[in-house]
Image 1 (tube, helix red, strand yellow):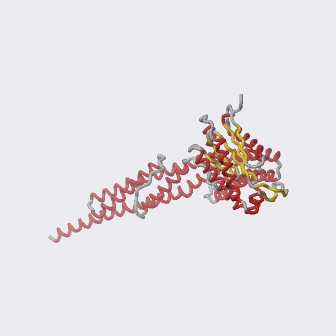
Image 2: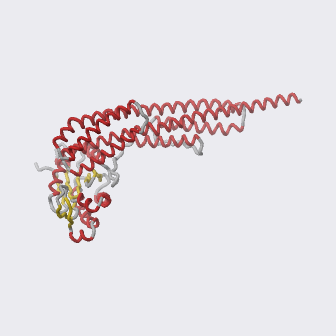
Image 3: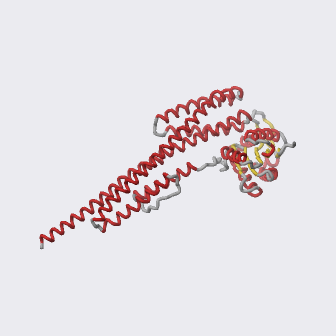
Length: 442
């Protein structure tokens, strides 16, 4: 009897040890692989996605520089110089961030291209500072434009390669998750077959977690970035689920068409405005293009300081949103080109009316920008852009209203040129004014 009991005890002990060993082995294997996947995921999020996003920002910045450079060389508007300076500073910040990424042959080549472009751009800046427009135009044609084009082509190639690297990493994560799921399920099922009630809860938990992570990886690999693994707790599974959620959010951000928001007014910037104009032109939708410019803004900033000038730009942006929101329609776009220049895209019927309402609102708003002395005088003494001391009136606003139906074949360039021409005419007039250029008479 003792021998029989002893044998049964040994079998129970052996069976229990087998269950424990297989259960521990399954848990250890799953945690080991999940730890590795967590490291891989963090590398994807912190390095690969960061590199991809930085390359995208560099591309957008270069395109914005190209647009500003073209406008500056055509219009020779000093207001654009500040916008160009801001874009160049933004480009330098991106390049500094680029230098902090892990070194690779691609990044070395990219760094060399960036340095060549920056040297040419610095030379162009010097010409612009001295108002040497002919040299600036020549340098732009011979150096900055070709170098920028070469850099944009390389960035596009680099971005494509980075996207392929991300896709490969996601596929590898999916495969590893699938392998982990299969091996963990096999070991867990083997332990269940040997009967271990204590192991059942652990096995089911691992099974559910791995299955959810597998599904999340497959959906993200398929381009569905809005899936979040439903895993609770604070263990490695939950941590990996959070990483998957962050990865999905990052990918979703990269896939969306961002409106390049102006950081001061939070209004759409140049790229968003250009895309909207091109969309309306391609759909043959007639529209009104309102180019809005503040008069005497620079001397205001010289007198009252940078913070006051920023407040003016913010409040004008709020005024435009308020007027368009009240008198326009939901399809209208209010954009901030930069500095004291704004754009409103509206329907043909409401363009002139909006200009009138904007002028009325600005006229009511502008006294609040000045101190009591300047308000009472209606003017103040300051230096113009040439250093000449003279008397300036309080700020006014000029609005060029261009109807797209005035052109047989509308284009952004034609509209931009007409806006510049009308704006220059309005700025020499007294007070706040607008001018409508509608359909040409046959």
